[in-house]
Image: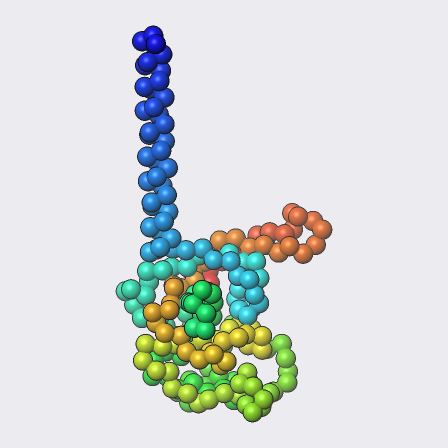
Length: 203
């Protein structure tokens, strides 16, 4: 093999190793970020309408609750208590020590009716507690290290009214921004993207 070919092969090897190292470092950083800092999720159901729509893609802050306690009103992703393989997203309504009660669709926390501008009710019927806990529930006291979760689409949300509390260790993180949003309805693909939702903060 000529010296030129040897140099060319060595140069190719160096370039390949440089690219391989760069890709490996990028993968390690991406894995670290996803595991400890920020993770992306897609909204598959309408339980958080109008705050989050089906097809919204959100980013979740995974380290925030290492430095502060979850707060009333936080929109959080957590592992579903009845199936740890599933991730749910709801709003925190009750923190440890809160007394939660629902009377005729109105949520009371520690005896005071909540003002919830983010909530919608699509069903005008009031269901009795004997039938199901959707519209009349409690009172219950949130136990230590636990949270009471509810969806903003109150008449179509499967939440703590039905399956109980969420342990703090099950919290994955707090949703903070919509980075993309799809709506696959209609014949025009250009209208599938909800441009007005991109960059919107989750509140």
